[in-house]
Image (cartoon, rainbow, N blue to C red; front, side, top):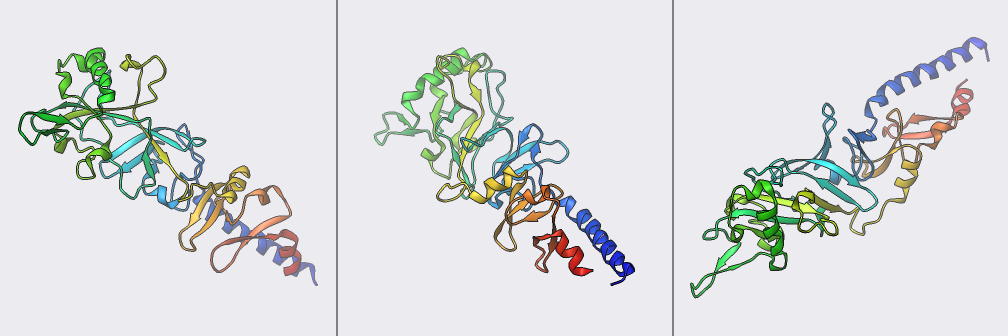
Length: 301
């Protein structure tokens, strides 16, 4: 075999790899969004993370902010605890001790892979005692019965008396209601217009000794998520992330993919990148498969 033929084949392989690298580099998944690390099941685009989550959680490429979107609005995500499988969001229209403002409410889509964390407490503020469905009239017309959590009534007292921004409005504590959205059913959830309440507060993890100090509460909404029906972390995903890859999902083939630096997808992990004897070549199905470098160079020469 002539040297000329060998050189031509070699440069063809290099040129092919140049085109391959430029094609896949634009498909790399982000490892962070702002200051928040992005790990499975979250992702930053199509093919990154679990597709059940990508329709609800997105990363703004310009602002680098992670956002949860539901049928009630868009909410900034402040942090994610991957070990506990918890997501923490804020609602800019939520009332706190720093500021009170009119709110529309908050709700989760029925098919979303999230649920409210048990530590999350919702408190409706400035509700109409005569018109709000949280105060149901008695059948004999002698009064109204509250659907609120009576054991948590002290939270209303602390908010209305010890929370400066709310206490300045001088509301009656009887217009406050601590409740769980599911208690009222999906027709009301956290729709403040239907509930006849002007605002709400959400908080979690009050902390020991902080129950009577609402200015120190963690305002926001804590959500729980599951990996799947059995809540099992995919084993193949662990190997992918340990090799500096991002776990993803190929919607065309309904199969797992590992997105490696440079945007190359594999069906296992990215350890091949640290082995100079391996490269990737495409099948007609556009999946990338690992092959030995010498097999390509010397097999084609």
